[in-house]
Length: 33
Image (cartoon, rainbow, N blue to C red; front, side):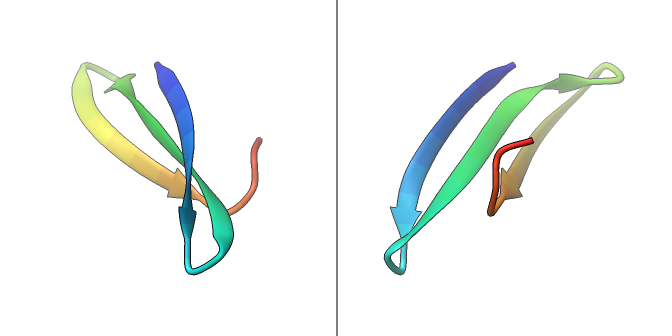
């Protein structure tokens, strides 16, 4: 899983790329967890 963050409307978003349960998913979170 890769965690990267980018700015969106002046707010930091965390984008998590990876395989979860064998499926490719991209998740977005406002905060890191």
